[in-house]
Length: 152
Image (cartoon, rainbow, N blue to C red; front, side, top):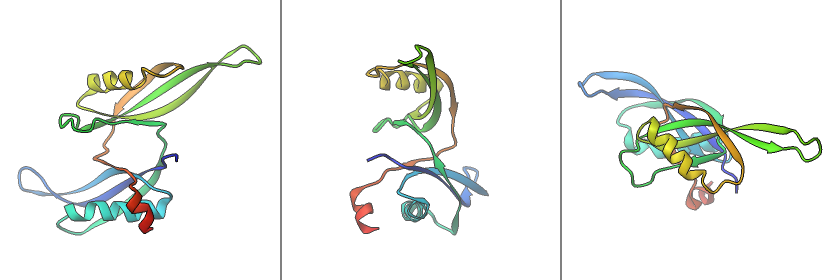
């Protein structure tokens, strides 16, 4: 089954480290079948962590060919979007063709993101180049679980 990712933004008042309240709009990545399920899932996932009112302010489709996560690595607390260009050979014309794909990498910093990307791509048969790597504002990722799909 292909993952369908949705970036859901949640708006709420957050208590900052200095004790002041600040309105924030934080993005989360949710694996869902459609926009309706994405909204239901993000509300279900974040409700236990919220102390006051919140709202889902935006939902948009997020196109990631692959996710490279770092489970169990507490230092990898940031997410980076990498744009990869794959080079394929058109058999009929004999010309090289480039196609771009975005991947999401969980890492501690930019160097770690590139290292994890290279490790994750080791088994790839296609030649690729890294066109760009940028840090995202994504706070967390919520994967689909069988129990969630059965309830829906």
